[in-house]
Image 1 (tube, rainbow, N blue to C red):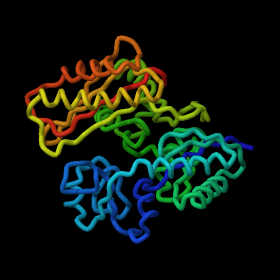
Image 2: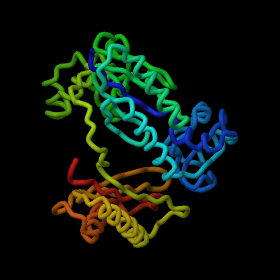
Image 3: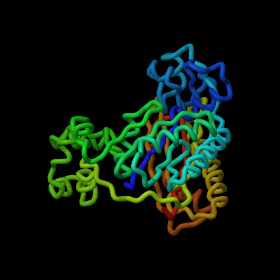
Length: 341
């Protein structure tokens, strides 16, 4: 039998959980975010497919979502419900007999030996649906990168295979930001270097890109464009790389003494959560969203990995000191990054 990697991605996960709890919402545009009140400040956590058809998407201000889709049903975030549903999904995946690597609430990688990966994928979809009522898309690949990118072509609720044999036929003409891990800034830099498509990036000289983009980044981007990835699927328990808290203020804060007080309150919550994880933090990152909607982040590396609340709060203040205080603030966030991977 052949070894395959399957990427399982729950379709519109958060919205789908909410629709399961409220069947009368099936087929309607549903937007989940904040406390569910689109007249208040907050951002979209997720939107159902009918809402996405109106241009609503994750990270969008709720007020913008309400303008784009006034008939949408807005619901508050219920983290406990999503965590419970996710746990059921992962249990169903493990029952398939595959090696399962959890990537987050709504996605996982499976390693399996089979002569019919599509049949195995459909069995996985059935198991997830029987256990939870949720639908998922499964990408099939000869490595984890290709499996992940296959999922995007199988949505919604489909199965799609992507391997070395058809990599360039499927991916070659696409822009570089179609690759897993390439964002808008990197894609723009690559375009400046004359590399607009996946095929062009794959054909680039790795050493030339190393000189231009960095000794690690340049060669990594070329390997990515070629679909190369030898990272194994691991069943080790999922450990978050960081944890954080953030708050959107309903009234802008233009007094930076008040910003510092709010920051310390958030840092204390984060420090408490870090202590509960029993894993030391190595770095503290602060996010500030200025009025009207410009977001900046700065980080501070701690002297040594620690769970000490005072050190985490000091790190947050040190990061905040890197920001300009000439504008009002609408959102503030604090994130602790753990020392271990």
